[in-house]
Amino acid sequence: MKKNVLNIGIIGYKFMGRAHSNAWQKVDKFFDLPVKPVLKIACGRNEKNLEEFADKWGWEETETDWRKVIERDDIDIIDIALPQHLHHEIAVAAAKNGKHIFCEKPIALEIDQAQEMYEESEANGVVHYLNHNYRRVPAIALAKKMISDELIGEIHHWRCAYQQDWITDPNFPLTWQLQKEYAKAGPHWDLNSHSVDLAHYLVGDIANVMAMTTNFVKERPIASPDGQGNLKAEALSNEKAEVTVEDASLMMVNFKNGAIGSFEGTRFANGRKNKLSFEIYGSKGSLSFNLERMNELEFYSQEDTTSLKGFRTILATEDSHPYIKNWWPPGHIIGYEHTFIHAAADFIKAVHTKGRIEPNFKDGVSILKVLEAGLQSAVERRTIDLH
Ligand code: SOE
Image 1: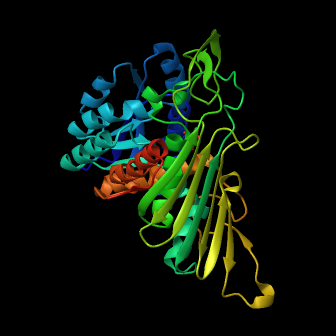
Image 2 (image 1 turned 120 degrees about the horizontal axis):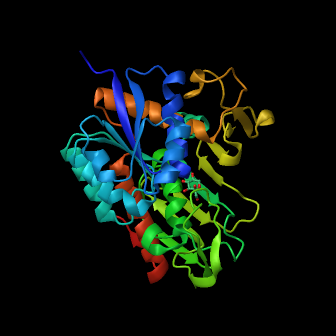
Image 3 (image 1 turned 90 degrees about the horizontal axis):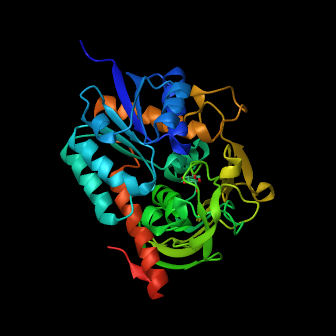
């Protein structure tokens, strides 16, 4: 008899561990899936916290050693819900053990690590998915469709800013996100990885890059090891240590198709909590999106009658809009957590058919090439060509 379940082993139980668990819990209630995901085993280092997490989110078992999870014959999917410095080793081991991989972003710290994750996954025939979840915001998927349907025409401008404000207090502690050895870079890696993924998805490949970065706060109190999963953290003491990543990054690019673009990434935009916004200007029309208003997409059409021309706001909650018919009646808006559920649905279908899903580790390699070129450009103060 054909197996009708897919057993998941999740590694990590903080912010992303919760977002992913919620997705695995709900996905087969809202989407028709060919096979049912089972929350089989949760893995993390702190036994007590892990037990609480597993109980709350319905994971059947727990394990503190990720290698044991990966070696189990009954596990089909490894979900890597961990910071980026831990992705490479686990993903490569998972691929070698024939596990399909659902991995948080950014893919890794280094391009060669990402490349190995991609090559091992391909060599072992496993499905690999990189969770740049915003591609699955219905309004963004709609933007993609409108571009493909030629409503925007030839794209001239991409203007993107990802702005947060969770570290503007100089006494916010030095969490792993502010240390190069764990994070590689600051918002340029964490936030611009999303923005570059969207630029690749909506506009196309990037030809060259020029960037600048800066630091506003050079030292911060050392963080307590607990509570770092929700962008909230306590200081251990008044003792301070050096911030080794940038606080803000600005990057300009030329796309291969002739468009020109800009990316701003910052955690110092007071009042902006999670504002990922982009504008696209094309020969036939324009689009504008803001994640803090994620159900809406603004559209301007050059083809409208002159007297009626102007930006209109599309509420992307009609049954004809991507993903939405699985949810509520039109106008009953959805949120951040739904994007993870959409990703889980597409991933399960890809695993079932042994198909492909995007973005995947190959896309992750391309994103890191752009980001790495940005860091290099900021140091060398020159434009870097991508090959
Ligand atoms: C923190 O900056 C963060 O959680 C990112 O890591 C996520 O990818 C983004 O979706 C929200 O902000």
